Length: 623
Image (tube, rainbow, N blue to C red; front, side, top):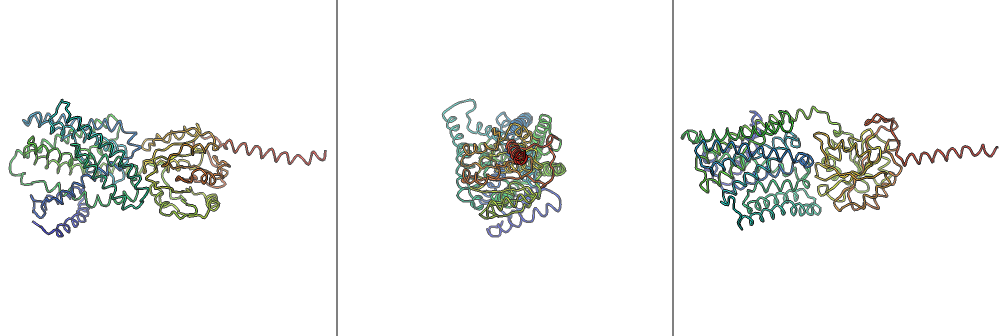
């Protein structure tokens, strides 16, 4: 066995580099490759590396990281829309494997306590293959959100069964019970309220991505410790921490890039190698009892999770590929199973045969889950690529700042809004900026950051009358939707009743749901009402327009003064839809002829009357 720490580090680093490359060549998921490497180098294989404290500690961080990543990458807008489905699927995904596990365990001759704990082990699952869905870019699909949301309930129920059996207070209500409830409430308060508040203050003060990475990872570990303190498992604390930090760590932010890099290249491979090191392959030929138990356990969990996914498909009207993706994500097992089987073995509810069979089950189900998830995620990604999206971001965006060079902030806004290679510009004053915008057709953004984007809690969007009749209004809406999704900020639209109906239709499109509030704003003259309702962490977004366009209002010229006077302490963004200057623009929403705003109509009418009166004066004098 190798004892030199430098040699061990070199071997682990070489493994994390070579295994993905080899797996791509032979077309198997890298998850399977890392587990096989763990078997080979572990104490039951070639015994090159011992399962020491350092390997276990880093591997545990990898297990926590998988749950943190799943929580952070949840699309909060879609999750809120899918929360009922997620909770219902969570019940399906726990109850059916649990009941099936009770039956098969009794057939194997185990008592009710052992059978119940084995049922809880079947009901839980670990989102080990979530990085595969993330790699294919389908992590925000409805199927993934249902699976991720449901995992929170399945893990909670499984660990609750474990806690009840472990603490031996079934159907009793003692001081110990209430003490446990108090700890859980305190832990949830700290993770979901205090930690995000501290992180937001931190991000406002220090915007360095490296510092942001460290604060997120620290909170992940502390959350896991708090969950352990409650008698639960650290994986649940890490997942709740990820959900709580969702809004503060956008998926395309520099902080998330660092989390993904370190996690996917160090922590997760070490966790998978650690799982492989637990597998004793000699059990395969030492006797039939362990193999029979392992086969029953694998079949029970496999079919229990498949039944749950099939019922979810029928209940929610999902496609077959979405059912396959849900099944692939939810029948993998590692963290929850390891926690339950280890504790069950320690308190002598499980014997050595169950322990070894559970580890074999982990290997088989992680392998099958990897193949199924990869196939389904790839098919779903191909469907998404083939489906034309009306608000798909275009290459033709102009982003500018005024007076101060904000190149980094503009680039960050473009990345979070998923704009592909926008043109970045810095103008010396508002006149130069407006002149630049009005002499080209590109969709344009003027951005002023007063605080980091990931600390914004609400986007207050002022939409003028007839904005929906603009040629490229859907792209402006898509910009707001994507930005809201990335930073987790709630959207509040200020607009008139007619435009509000159009926005509501956009917000409830399938696969592009946006949770938004609405405030009545009949005319652009009322835009200052927003200033009275702004909170410190709000950002104002104004949808403007160029002259001779359907929604243009002369008061748009007063926007610079308005921003300087009433919104200087807040971040703001002025958005101009793409236009073809001088061209007539059809009404793409209703097919009617375009209409000018009420203010513009009044001004135009007064102008015609003045011109008409001036033209008639010479005639009157002759008379």
